[in-house]
Image: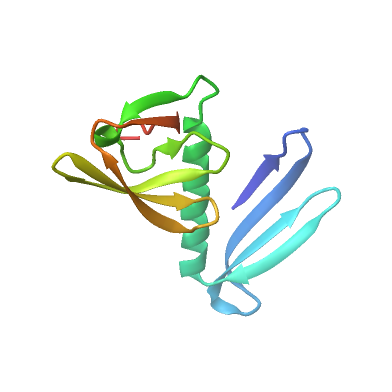
Length: 134
């Protein structure tokens, strides 16, 4: 499979993906060629699937990003995937309601996770609101 890709300045490159590689048939070969760059490598089918899943997640995040003003929701209304407004990227990983309190597990852009307790009625300012079903 061959896909033409372009960067934000309109420079193009070609991404080629093929089953099998010189290292053996149980590999996936990847090749990126452009006017000023060339990269090639191979990986297992499982790693190729992880790469594809990561690209899908990044594409979904980019499509859902909004330039509009942040939104404020109650802690009890947080959904997995909501992104906290602030200097650092913080994404909701899990939400657990316990009576009048909500335990939110956050994940940073660097992959660190932690949990915080909030009153269910606490206002949380979000940079991006997850769209249910999206």
